[in-house]
Structures are given as C-alpha cells and as structure tokens.
Image (cartoon, rainbow, N blue to C red; front, side, top):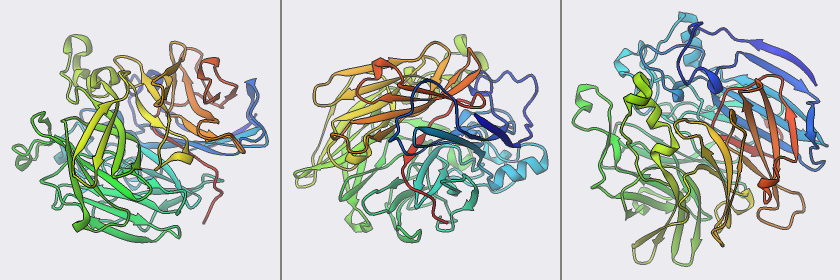
Length: 488
C-alpha cells in the first residue's frame, strides 16, 4: 500500500468523550487519505471488477449544544476504486458551509435533530429549519459527480468521481428548501429524480435534473401538513412518494417545539404520478399505518404498481432509561430491533384505486440494495443489513429470494460492523444476482478497516477478497456503486 495523509482535520469534541455514538465503532476519523495499491490480505480482487464504491459517514468534528444525535454528524465520504485486480482509496470530509462556520467559531452554531432549533445562531437549513446541513446521510453518482445529501434537506455537495476533489454545492438545488437525501438516478435516461419537503405549504415537491445537470422539472405534491418523508421510489414510468402518520406534533409546532408524533389511527398514504408528472396527475393510495425509512424497488405489473419497502412495526418505541440512562430515547430510536422493520409489499391498482399489502419476510432488516439492472422493473433478489440489537450498527448481510422466500445470512464477528452494501453486476454475467457484493467493515477488536467483496449468491462462503484500508473508519450508513468516470 502506498498511503499518504491528504489532510488532518481539527476536532472540537471533548478529549474524554463518552457519547455512545462518538466512541467505539462510531469514533470519528480526522485523517483524509490518498492510498494506492491497497493490500489484499485475503483472496483476490476479481480482474473484471471495475468501478467506484463510495459510502457516506456521520463523522462529527463539532460537539452539540446539548444532545448529540448520530444523524447530526459531519459528512465524510469513503471511496474505493477498482480496476484490473487492484484498488485505491480516498476519503474526504464534506466541506459544508455549516462546518466551515462552526470550525471558525470554535463551537456549535446549529441545533441538532434532538435539540431546540431556537438554539441555532444562524437561520440554517433543513425541513425543520435552523439545522446544520451536515450532508452526511446519502450518496449517489450523477454525471460522474459524487453527490452527498442530508436527510432533513440541504445542498447536494459534489466531488469528482475519479479524484474525490471537492466541487462544491450543485447549482441546480432549489435554495429555498434544498433537496432531501435519497434522490434516484435512472441509468437509462441519466436523469436524477429528487424530492424536497418542509413546514410551508404545499409541504412536498418533486423534481428532475437532466443528464446535463440542469433542473428541468419541479412540481408540488400537496400534503395535509408538515411530514417527515425519508425516501422515494421509482418504476419505469412512475415515481412514488409517501405520507406516513408520523410527523411533528401540530399542537406543539406553534410553540417552536418539534416533537415527533405517531398516530396509528391514521393510514399510510402513497402518492403515485408519472415521471415528470404534474400536480393534477397525483393519485393517492391508502394502506395500514406504518413508517418506512427505505424502499427496495417499484415496478409495474399489469394495472398494478408494486412497491417494496421496510415497514416498521413500532415506529416510536418507548425509551428504556433503566438500560440506557441519559441516552434512552436516542438508543431506542436508532435500533432496528426496537423499530422492528421487515420487508412488505404494497400493490396499488391504477385502474381501481385499491391497495393491497402483504409481508414478504418476518426478518428484522433494513438498508436494502438490489442488482441495478432490475431497478424499476421486477426484481427477485434483495440484499439488506441486519442490526446489532440495541445499536445502530450493521452486524450482517441478508440475501432474500423473493421467488422462494429463502433467506441466507452472513454474520460478521463480534465487534465487526459493515456498511450498506453495493451489488455490482459481473460483466457478461448470467443475469440478476450474478454479481459481487461490496462493503466496508470496521473491526473494533483489531482496530482496522477493510473493504470486503462477496459472491452475491454465496454470502455464507464469506468474502472472496479482503482489502486493507489505511486506518479504521467510523461506522456509516448509505453507500452506492458507479461504473462512471468523472464529468466536470
């Protein structure tokens, strides 16, 4: 391995930090690395594996005013590029405007999601307002530019996909609200489809950026009030948005209090409209009350639009102070074992307006990935992440065969945690699932990190290649794969 430190950042966190999501597997990283010819410590990188795997990370450099939440952490991108059986690695802090302000001020300037927004010393960003746009949630690649985004809306920060050089905020992002995490890039058209939401009517918008990087569409999807959507879905012809019965308590909002309220007596609702559709083309479908962080896929089946996602059985779990003390609310809200998400299917009949739903798996899992060749059309296979009970940490990879219902699981050793995987089609492969699965892992026992590659249909055999990174990286969430080169 040929590795040099590109930059070392200054941390303003306390030296004797005890926060559970700023220590252990979530210990922030300060070094940016340029590392070439990475060491393969087991197996071999496939010669025909070519492209970029990149993951976003909540990597805090600045403390909170009062209560830190892991989703507040500053963005850091970790990128590994494969070609010819070799790999190189770059990681970069997302240089957001908010981070620059806080480092210059020597302390926090924005309230986190678990804090009163009136603590913020600047107007800030976000669907709630007064928030720091940490750009630490999601990552996609569009036009050869790696884009990081934030779940409560903000800028899309761009990086060159080859060099990971920062290119600044994308100019097409609407500046009144920004965009949410989880935009979708269509491989067929080159378009990026996004949504944005906030506290002002009509509360939700849907937009499109074309293959040249120009915003060409932005329409309202009116909601009854402020909502907290996190993801969208897209089939070949349609896009799907949501209105779930969890939102800021409307009785408290006039007092500036942003407390989530869960109302199981209300239905879940899905908005369906054509790609680049108009507001008057939105159709609503109702289903049982739940909350969904992430959808797997959407596809058309005759008159029906089929949507798969992870329905939570307990979207607002009760805190357990006897177990978690001062962190009781936080620990339950980010724990998959508490939220209890499992794979569900909704069938929305575009002819009759009816919606049917069924559970596809009882397994508690989330953060799904599919073979990109079947995005927007019927898929058979899903790869998702299992969680360490009590924590927001991924302790395994689950492969679900939707045709047979059979599931295969690979569990990492205790103290080893993975990232959301990417499914990478094998060139000239036989079809869906003839692919590799790629992930980053953080080993807290041996204080190291690796990129691991699996055969997608044989997870149980373990990784076919393990590639050492120059330093242990913090645990993280969303990741993506791209075979594109860069576009300036």
